[in-house]
Image (cartoon, rainbow, N blue to C red; front, side, top):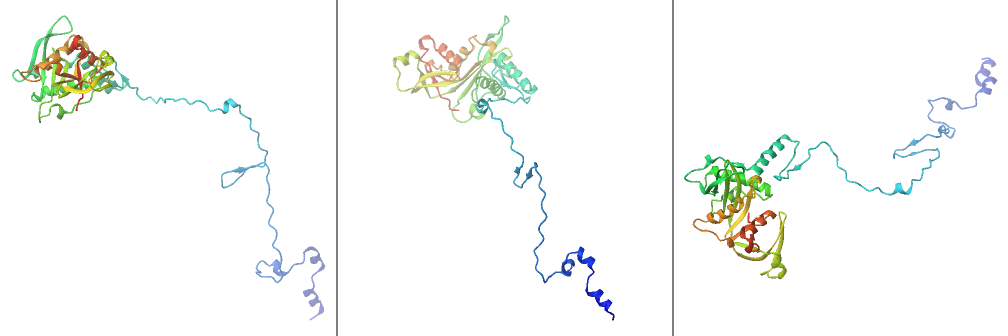
Length: 337
């Protein structure tokens, strides 16, 4: 072999040695996995920095390189807590109203409720419809007949006593009138089984005052055992009270009575007259018929009659019924319904 072949194989040309830095074959070959010469890894590329932008982190906070803004100091008056005011949101809901005449609460803008109020109002003012055809000439207990009316023309009037032995149709009518009374007086409802209880001693009787084709008055009487004498102001001030005294407020009426019980026979639970027929002596007449016809063949003395805790008008009725000389000798009892 000639010498030219050996020189061209082992010695690089001057032009390559000046442009390419010296490096081993392993550094240039990407397939090489090991190297006989130890070298440090190349430095990581420098990150670019931006000024004036926010960098969000995983915690939801952000930092900014811009200068923080200065907050204006609020006046001391604005820093004070404002007074809260209860507001009502009007979403078009119906407004509830209470009739001053009959006392019924209803929604005037609701057709069904408004119609119900009109029916109840008519009963409270003019009386409950009553057809005389429901009466049985032989069995119905009519204790008085006469005339009555609101105008010049007088019509037939009568008082009917209804008890547990009366016809079903009469008891239903008595219940209908009693519902009007309980609603107007805001009194508790008496269960059907209690009102017409078939067991034991007869407890309740209902007296209906009928004028023409309307029932305009009701008295609910019951059998009682004890009552408590009402104490008048002058008696209380003078200290002439037997035993302890108790004062209560019931249905808007404030009364004081002795806590020492006394015997009684007849209790007046409810007394009612419709608006158009008031101040005509109907309530007083019902009280008289109650004590005359509650027990067959016996007229109960007034001193043996007591009233359930009455309204203001009920208290005035009781004092007027007992008379001026015994206005402060009337009694009250506690209902056991």
